[in-house]
Length: 134
Image 1 (cartoon, rainbow, N blue to C red):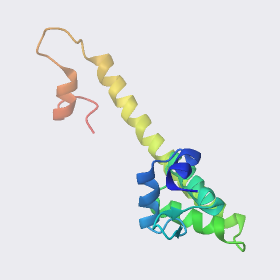
Image 2: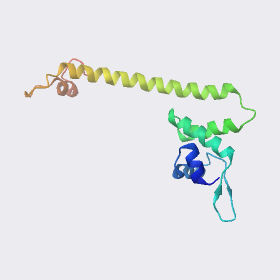
Image 3: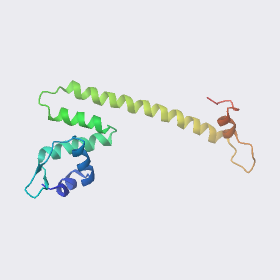
């Protein structure tokens, strides 16, 4: 298969596929006599691992590790689960941080009259003059 066929199957751009190849995240494709890359099912599988892992927040480096595990016949599900658990813990920490940010913004919006006056509890809090500065 050529790169455009692989791009269509994996819903990745040809540019992304070339990037993953240049970073050695996928197995090097065979080059035909014309110099064009030729991809097989193994490449499709590797690219799908990367695409799906990226969608849930794995970095390129982490994706490379997951591709390595997917190609390792001696891998353990424990090793794979550990990577997923670590990412889940990171996501949960980000969610907690976002919830704190949301709560602060909700508090500010509720306190601010949003009128034509110059008094603004949001600015007061940002300057450290309000009760909820922190």
